[in-house]
Image 1: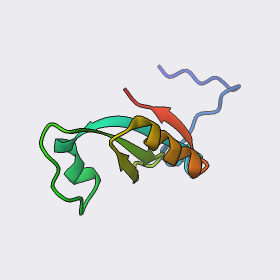
Image 2: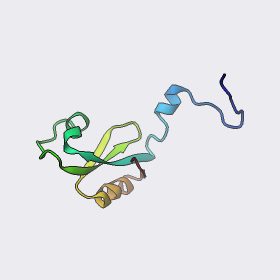
Image 3: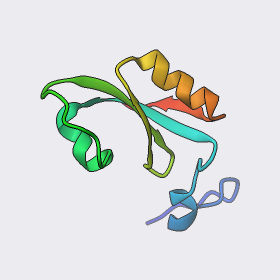
Image 4: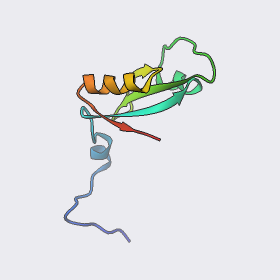
Length: 86
């Protein structure tokens, strides 16, 4: 059984996919072993290196930094509200 609260309309899959576009970005720590698929064309980085990645709400990579504060600053410079992913 599905419950629908009329005060909170349900989102379609398409609406959910675009939620936060242009306004939100998510920040997360990422290991060098995960970078190839997410940041194509990136030069080789030593295994085990931890970096901070900033992604658009739709998952597009925006920037990569070795410092969390720089990644946060990148979000703010692009008028995006950063959200941390754990």
